[in-house]
Image (cartoon, rainbow, N blue to C red; front, side):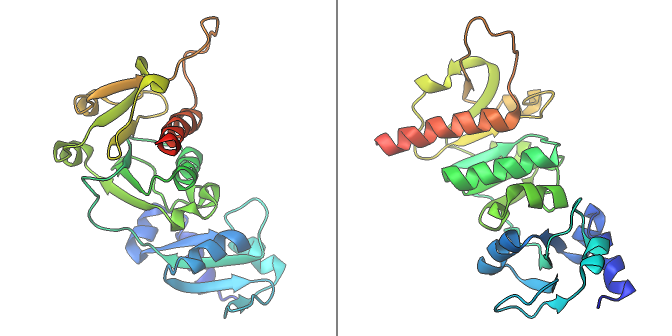
Amino acid sequence: MITNSELKYIKKLERKKYRNLYSHFVVEGEKVFKDFFDANIPIYKSYSTKKIKGQNSTIVTYNCMKRMTFLKSPSNVLGIFSTHMKKTPPLDKKVLVLDDVSDPGNLGSIIRLCDWFGFENIVCSKKTVDCYNPKVVQSSMGSLARINIFYEDLNSYLSKVSIPVYGTFLKGEFVNRVTFPSKFVLIFGNESNGISKSISKFVSQKITIPKRSRSVIDSLNITSAAAIVMNKISNQSFKC
């Protein structure tokens, strides 16, 4: 069984201020839970509707899980893990920078893309949505456990970077014509406003995704754009 105090604690973790206060966040779903557990992320407590091998989860009923869950339909396992951010972002490695990305689903999908295409580090602006938001955790599908994420003042961070900085814009060099070095920074901007003026000054080369001349679409969803650009970079790496 779960106590009322435990239930209240879990529900508090839906809000950023309590995740920051307690340094805990919620993971739901057996596969996602396993990804965090296998990555040795410290676990505070877990609950499940059935016995899970190698786990000492508190067994609860399906109705209890319905009261605990942040999802539309409850899963069979819910875990409370400790936040695990590293303190200092790298200055001389391949890094993805996110300038005020606000949608949780977009951030989760980008984290998953980074896991797929080998971007191990993401530096987020202070206004970018919290990576421990339940919707981010769910849409990243466990990739959050394997990606290093930092929240920084981007002006301060980028002023210290000496490697090439690429920014995605509506106008720029076609990404399929760009040769990327082994170490670089790649910036994606806010879903509506793109890369802010204060951050664009750090960009050493503007890049864009070519489109068919007859297309009336003026832009792509950020996750679609990220997938296309990362795929181009990945293909280049395989050719080297």
